[in-house]
Length: 440
Image 1: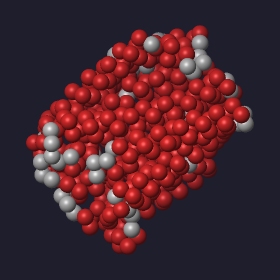
Image 2: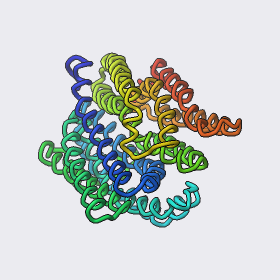
Image 3: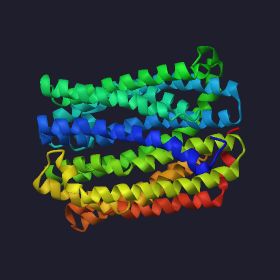
């Protein structure tokens, strides 16, 4: 990624990532559509309200994966092979340690999290807790996949992710049909299908890396540097994890507010989130692409190239996101109807979705700028942006609730939060202070 036209290089790298992210969203749809149609909307709501907590767990996996990718990409750009081997070996060691700790905590605290912290309605508690327990049991697979995918991205390979997620998506849909429709396992079947699919994706990614990049496959003999490289990985990963964790916690607190407005809000919100994910695909994909592009070029000392790449990426991201948002606005009710919601739940879901679609551009700028800063090794400002976003969103949500605005309070707070956060991170890019954070 250190040669060729910036726009072409980034776009070709991002297209497979967009395909992979779309598949990921679609196999998330599979759970929701099948549960909504073959179990009931209450079960769909039960899965939906655990989303903020499962996202919180995922932040640890993606944080380590992104930290690994930043380190490997900069060492790769600087052609430092020994350091790459040390980082890779240490990242897999950390994967096992962190996932074991998280799974143990989830099993011990599941009742407190689902019943008390989320204030889950009585009729959804059993299903929500069961889904959460099964999901948390498969964290090791998500951790292994994210670390492996991070290494492949650092080497400039984004096509593998599309292959891995195609396999897991097809498996997820097939297992959903088997477990939910045939075996009638309900929510447990949806969770089991997701975990098994994640295990398949992790296995496929590791085998792919071993075949195409045997020189970087983890070797235990490089663990002699585990202390030094653990410090490096944690320095890069913790702020990224923290940023995503703050966002996830924000949605968890927001979910509590949504829950207070009853089943119509819970079901409408759960369905809306599934559709919203489609509009975020360009944003998330270009975040990943610009981070890898920036990492390699910073490692190679090509500062001017990364700045050109950033400007092109913002243009791509905002343009494609806008086109998707127009489609969502046109087909909003038909898209939400896939999740078997109607009446008041449909009304609330549409209002929420339509408002967010008008401001996706701001979140796209934030994500791409954060990806750029992270790739450069400047991971603290993106972490701080999570606080900015969370603070504005929650303050406005609860203020509007106190003013008696009703259920709209939890979504009219999002646009100002997105706009102000994008301005905050863009100021960091313009300052040029990110140039001093390279690790090589």
